[in-house]
Image 1 (cartoon, rainbow, N blue to C red):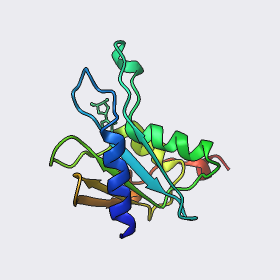
Image 2: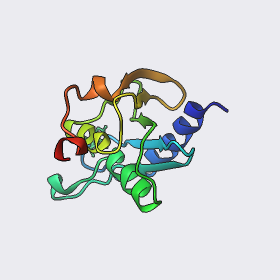
Image 3: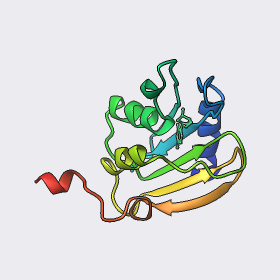
Length: 132
Ligand code: THU
């Protein structure tokens, strides 16, 4: 199984556990760190809408809790066949733990639909180095 196939499987599994009763837009994310470990997460909405969390946010929290702080590749699986691209806030959240070459794939439960690098997702971004 290729690395991306494994991430698609994990992201789909996460998507299928999402709590998205308000948008009906379940999303799963799965990421791989340079050491090869993988972490996943799903979106969790809330009756107070702005309090909801994105799938990428949950996967990043799982990674940090697991003791890792670098994203090499990340897959996001939405509900259908349209690529589920990350919101602006999640682009910044990924940026915190990614170099410009990090690879993002928007996928359905089987295939890669769209691939972009971190630099393409958030060009000329502000990150931890800017505060050194
Ligand atoms: N959402 C994600 O979890 N990740 C994305 O990449 C895009 C959008 C969630 C947030 C919200 O729960 C629902 O999808 C609709 O916006």
